Image 1: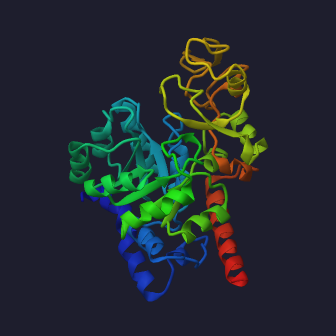
Image 2: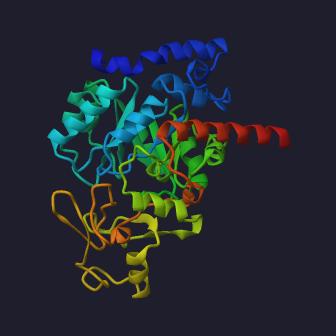
Image 3: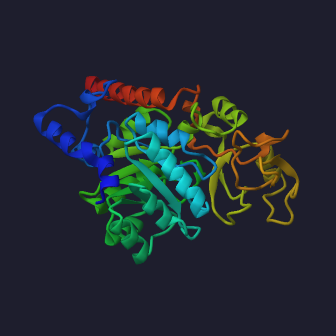
Length: 371
């Protein structure tokens, strides 16, 4: 491992010593987390990645810039930086921005529905972790990650997917359930598929993903055997996330039953299922009988404009960021998981992470009292 990456993991050995001595890694944090560490798998995850909390931030898509993963990583959790579909020079800029602002680890995400042409640039710039989803990396891509000394994670959604990822050789797995917001690779509910993935994973840490919005949800996932938990929707509604304010406010007002798993917003990524809020675009399309492209109501209408002047058409896959302009922003794809009902404010990422872990601790204490 080269020196530029090694600093991201210098805390790992010390954390391992602390674990053996009975002192939790969280006790060393300026804002102490709970001593509650429910499993050997979670302790191993914290130690090997130099984390304070077993919480991963979903990468959310290339429209979300570096500010959010920087804040998450600096708070002791795992920031997620989405790099797929970005040109190499933009990837260089984003990885450099995160590395300049934190010495903590972060995961660079590549969705393999698109060729990861900028992967080598991300590795050359010092991305310490690469996390793939929607496919298995090739031998050459895995070799590139390993040559760079980076860690490797792969999102899976079944026992068979876990087996394939383990044959490649991974440092961790992300097990996604169909409750997740955004583009949904999974077809099982999380707590149904998680035991199958854990059975295959053995000693490899498994991060649970899908439909979690608070610390009680995290506790359920950890109690089911996951080493950590990945949340996406909840991190959209944070101050550092550059999602549009109207999108964040829509999340605040939504209940858990207001999402739909659909193929409605397929512009730019055909045939990929995704979970979104039931907004105007979706409701018109559903009322029309869910017609295919070419026959959908309002098709071709402009719902927003990007800062470079390009138009965002109805049914596009793009989520609205702060830079979007227009009067129909709420008709864009408003990605949200089934845990959206827990989103009721817009805190800083640091405040949210500390709160989530406190809620997890409280859920654990309640379970012990009622046992």
